[in-house]
Every structure is written in structure tokens, then in C-alpha cells.
Amino acid sequence: MKGSTAYRSIQKRGLHIGLLPEMAAAVNPTTPITLDHDLAVFPDAGRRLTVARYAEHVDDLAARLWAAGVRPDEHVVLYKTANADHWMLAAAVSRIGAVVVNLSPTLDAATAAVLIERVHRPTLLTDGAKLDVLAEVPLADITRRVITSAGDRPGARSLAEFAGSPRVRPVVRPIDEAAVITHTSGTTGTPKLVVHTPRTQAIRLLPQWRLLSLARKKQTVAIHIPFVHSRMVAAMSLALLKEFPVLLMKEAAPADVAEQLIEHRPWLIEALPNSLMEWEGLAEDPRAPFGPVKVFSSTFDAIHPGTMSKLLNASDRRGALFFQIYGQSEVGPAVGRAYFRSLAHKANGRCVGWAMPKGAARVRVVSRDGRTPSETNPGFIEVAWDGLAKTYFAEQQRYDTNRDGEWWRTGDVGYRTKLGCLHMLDREVDMIPGVRSSLEVEDVVLGRLDELSELVLVEGPDSEPIPVICTDGDRPLDRARWRAAVADFPQLGEPVQIPQAELPRTATLKVQRNALAHWFQEQLTDRT
Image 1 (cartoon, rainbow, N blue to C red):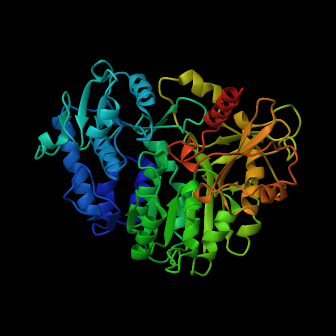
Image 2 (image 1 turned 90 degrees about the vertical axis):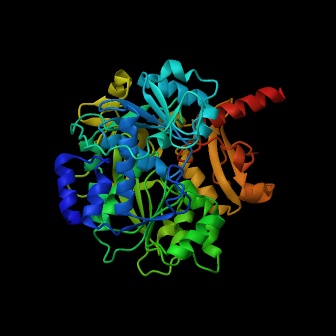
Image 3 (image 1 turned 180 degrees about the vertical axis):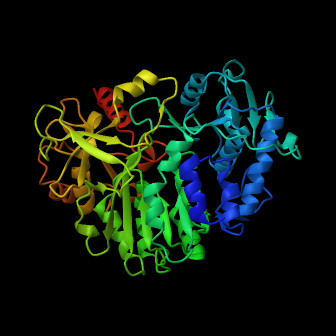
């Protein structure tokens, strides 16, 4: 089987992650999968696998889950310590026709319990460390059974007990029924559970299948995104079907990342915007860890132009580019654009891209007040295509409020230029009176002050924009440099500096602006 043949099959029959490793092995069983950590569920497997071996592990785990009592149509909540085996376990759940519900390991016990209960007595697939986190949660009352992938605990069965179980035939879920459930970032409260089907997952592969088709050689792809995220489904599917060697990275510390990049010399890196921002300093590393990288890719948030420029200038490859895709869990990839070395530093960070080729998502901007959307009067950004998520699990009404026929309201506001570029200015809930775009202000000031590691505007008690800042190494802010950098923004209040570690973040490292604003209000209350 060729990768293109497998891809056409997926587009026709849907993407079933339980079948994907087997399909990829049929394309090329020797495609390497390398890890920067050990698999918790298979600690003796080593860090260098092939896709054939990977598929064998998935089949083994599927047999163990079946022996443990999991059956088709059941929901299996997967909440465990961050590890590449999460995606392997998710594929195993899918392989026996169950519906996997991916919860981020960054969720606290209370939030995880709310989401587990929302699914209505699912199987909980977890590990000893997370069961310790959930120690005060009445799991016997809200789950059907508890299974651990690593670590023994009372009241739970371990997958290790079922080693050697007879293999079972894969069960293929209907193309338009729930297959994988992920959750939103939770920037505005308790996360929503987003339902993906085999059809919607397959359609979302289209834009980047075309991008990867530009590659002339089968070169290493480094992936550093949460293993639980819906984007991980597409990233793994695309890389394996294209026969690209894969480097799956869990560690985020710049020193660890540098070692992996130097050893494996990836052609492409896909990572979170905030991770890339954290790695900027590696551009100065004399070992040139970014030297072999041809393509930097990010699909979560718009990224600061200064970060793109530093990364591209650290590449030794001709024609190196930064490919940015704007989207969200509910819609997948919506628009995209490429930035090149010569112009990245001049980029408008609010320009998130243009509509992608035929068959991809369509985007429109709808007026908020009856006037035509523009730079000074942004409208609601909406997306339409067959890749939209099917629903919010157990919250259909909440889903329906965002849906207008074929169009999905993203919650972002922006406008389109005469050339068709979509500019995303802010989340609607984060808009601050007197500020055209908080994100734009943050882009500009971060570009002027290299010592800032993060800048977030929040609304103060009198509706004034308050800059909350973090600096490299948590060094004190130079107030004179700050005043010069923000001279164009007289509406800003005095900056509030906090340690980088205290920034409230989501699983994809987005700053939780509501939580930050609430923290700020509490600080003011305490002072008075």
C-alpha cells in the first residue's frame, strides 16, 4: 500500500486512529518513531521504535482492554501522566470500537472529576500518579471501572494483568458517529468536550497533506504538542502516512530540546507557539540546533513576529519558512500562511492567513453591529466546512448557540483585508474598552523589549488595560525602557510583574486571561 492510497481510503471511509498504525505499517513498516522519553506502559520497549512495532503495541493494548471488559460504544476517559503512550492507548481504545475521551494531565482533580461525571460512568484509563491526584474523588460512583496503564492501586485493574490476552478483530465505528472526544482549552471556565467523528478527522488532514507533499525526501518530523490534543491525531496521521521519521518530544526545557534537535536534525518542527517562544534562546546556541530545520509549523495561536524571525534566522536551510495555521478544536485548520526569513520580522502578527485550497475551510466575518466589519470595527469570525466538530458532548444546546446552519462562530473577532487576509484581533470575551486589539499591543511591545518573556493585557477595575508581564529569569523590569516601548499606547495602566511560573496556563500553554484578571482583582482587594 502507498501513502497516497491509504490517504484516499481515509478520505472515503474516515480516519480511525485504531487502524492508523496498521495502515501506516502497510505503507512502510520500517518508518522510525523516536521518543525523548520511555513509554510508561511499555517501559522496556526503548525509545526507538518502528511503525510496525508501534502497531503491534497498539494491537496488544487493544487485546488487554478487551480482556478487561471494555466493549464497543463504551466511553473510555484517558487521564494520565503526560507520555507518548497516551496516543498509543487512545488508538487501542479506538481499535475495539470504544470512544476515547482525552483529558489533559494538566487538569486539576476537580475539573477532571466534572468532565468524567459528564461522560456518565465511563471506564477510566489512568495511572497510579493520577489516581493519587484523584484520591478525594468518588470514582466508584462516577465510573464503570478503573484501569491503570502503569502503577497498581486498590480498586483498579492493571493492564499488566492482561498481558498475553488473545488478539481481537478491530471494530470500525460509523463514519459520522463519535470516535474521539477532546476538550477545549478552558480559557474561559470548565472545558467543553468536543466530539470528533472519523469523517471530521479525515477531512482535517487535507490542508497539511498538501503542504507535506512539497517535501522531496522522507526527513524527520519533530512533534512537540500535547499528546491528548485533537491536533495530535492529524500530526501523527500525516507524518506516518507520508513515511516521515517521527520524533515525539515530551520534554520542553530548552536544554533537552536542543539535545534532541542536534541528534535527530528534523526537517520540520511542529510545536505550540509558547513553546517556540520559550526556545528562542536556542537560536544563539553555537551548535545550531535549528540549523537543519526547513519548516516551522504552529497550528494553535498566532505567534509573535519576533519569535518567527529569530527561528527562521537560526535555520541554515534555503527557503526556510514558518507555516502558521489559525484554527481551534471545534473547526480544525481554518486559514493559513507562510512566512519567510526576509519578511518575518516585518509581519503583522494579527494577519493569520488566507483561505486554503479547494476543499478546505471557508471563512467569513460577520458584523457585530450592522456596520461592515473593518479594522476599527471588527466582526465575528465564522468557519464552515465538513471538518467542524459534531457537537459538545452532553451540551448540545451550548453547541447550537455557536452554530448558524453550516457556519460556526469561533468566538474571535477580526476583519479581512482587501487582499483577503484574515486578521484576528482578539477573543470577544477578552476585548478591553479603548484597545483596538490586545494581541496587537502585546505583539508590538514584545517585539521592542527582548527581556520580556510574556505580556498579557487584562481589564482593570476601572476597565483600563493593565499589562501583566514576565521577564527572562524573572529579572526586575527596567521602567525607563518600558515607558519608551509603550509610548504609542498611552491608555495602558502601570505594568504588573509576576513570576513566569505563576502565569495560569491551559494544556496548550495559552494564558488563561480570565483567571489572570481574577487573580489581579484579588491582589487589588488584598491591598485595600
